[in-house]
Image (cartoon, rainbow, N blue to C red; front, side, top):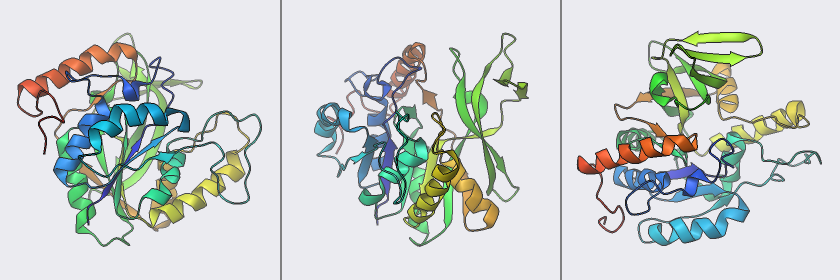
Length: 304
């Protein structure tokens, strides 16, 4: 059974200044998501489920559906503000969806197999998808031993501003113990890595393992996700800017013993386009991989 790839692509891109999900970075007009799908298919994934906003459907179908329809089954899921568990309603002051875990929740009807979750605008490298596919295909579909691919903090930052990262605590046996979300991580003027908030600065060494929303789950996860979403709405549903993150679902499962998460590792570089100023660097990194023979010059015209 081939696993499914769920791609979180509904973000607004406020720090980037536009829809970075659809901004070309490859020589043939490829976006970051093209390379992720290409790597995922090479690794053995089957169905592709982009999670998008309904107002982006036409753009996504024109830019990606046309390229991918001969490569894999592509089924869209739509993240909408009013998609909440039964018994809940949306406060009138709320204007945006609820975050990454809500985006995964939106894909529940399109996923029937083990599945991976990634961000649309992050370039993970082929090894990450090989690790995910191998893990998801090696366990029974009712398993609660999930997985994530960890990256080194220092290699996931931007020179142009702060970023949000889930910093992981991993036990000696390679299982995730906790993910702590830091929303303002970056370099200070002296080049140190710090998190800054109203309480001050927290320094980091740079070798810490972070989550880049590169997760592997089994279908039963959706039941836990719905329960966690209901609890989140009970506690935070009327907080206008509250965010329902994937780690906020995973952490309680780990603490209660209801699930475990194996931390996988990859030697491949991570590239990201958090800010528009990151784009030239990402384009050059992709060019280097093409020159090294990792990817063809024109991705889809030379595949399959």
